[in-house]
Image (cartoon, rainbow, N blue to C red; front, side, top):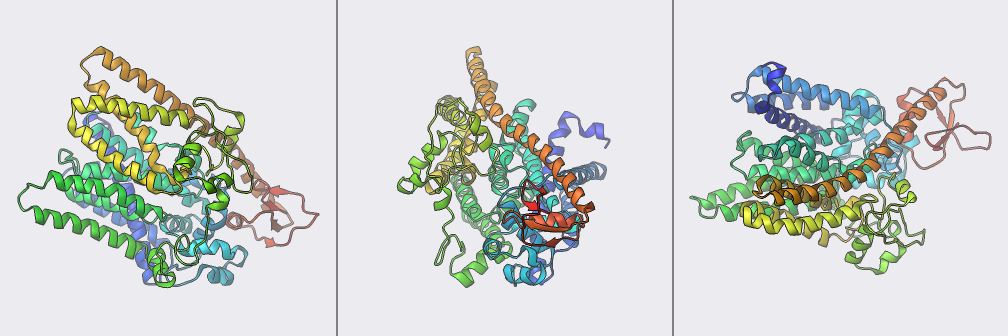
Length: 577
């Protein structure tokens, strides 16, 4: 099959879907193989990435053997490989300057790349002996106990490239997979091509992702995996979707659930609450099928197997070890001796308010990074308004208040109003679509109500799905309405909601472009340090992860205490020499 044949309308959607599937298979196989090797006490090495790529290709070719030609499948694999290389090169040239990224995230990734085995070794003790300059007991607390999926794959890529920033490609790969999976799903469900494209862009380039785009923060990644889980479950239980087999549908769901449970602790919570409603709906729909109990046991057993692999195998270094040694799988965030990471991170006034008041104030307040020590309170504002200081706070990857952006209060209101009104008309037009949307709304509501800290945007990725549902509903009504007035009103509502959404996201994009200008300066300064006769440097902050960047540039530095004669700063005033 020639490339021009692949780009024909009837071939485009399957090809794009396959690109997303290959990417997700590669990520999941990398995590599974890395963990399996750690059980055998084999440290991360170049084999992890090469083996994952080869096994992903073999699995894909086996699944596609009888459906498409070898030439077509080879083009798909080559395209995925080229995209991986391009995204890795890009990730290598943008710097994570964040606090969390340069404390415990890079500590974990650098330790893994240098031979640390989280199953059998304590991170602090390993670093004291092998990487003394970055050893920090506080950082190692999180590194030892947190889920390690993103760290493992980042470290395996770091091992090959020799650049710690290259591991951030996991973020770009996840965005790419999300774009492919979401576009393909909406195109398969008879959305117009431009509608499928806009829906996939809104879903994949959401504020959480854009805020954390150049960092090792994992909230944006988890948001995308939750969104892809919803789409994968819809595909799994929709027999009208025949582009992929039932086996591949289950592999897709498994790949996503296993990974999302090991991104961060709340991943297991989200995976559970988003999966159960669809699982129950499917059982209700099939309650009258022949051999129902066999069907029930097979479905249940498959999900149980996925959870076992995710928790007991991939999550062994976090969930299992935490349970064995600290009697709680979520240690140090829960159980005896837990560490409170929220009180000092929220406005002081939040200590006396319930979760619903905090959520309301955060959604409808000006975007600010208010902490306990500041003594400030959230400032409520009128939706659609922006103040200059909000833009500066949007620069941060984890703004506490108004964390979805300066215009999100308007987006939230428009989304809710659109959903409520549109659902009335959808109920009359297509009760099946109405039911699916209601089932999807259940976990969104539950996760928002049950999460104590839902006010912090980074902990509430489910809220963005409301905007996606609102736009989908408007497209659905526009496409199915027989009256011009219905089409006009749908189009008008879409323009208002989409324009507000794009405006909010544009502000984030502008800030990321500004970041790239800063990165250029950092690269120049690292080169200056490399050529300098003085290689004595000192940290001006606790961001020890920056030292990996210095080492990756082959700078043979000496870490010394800061003194008054050191006046040259690099890394945004984090290192002096």
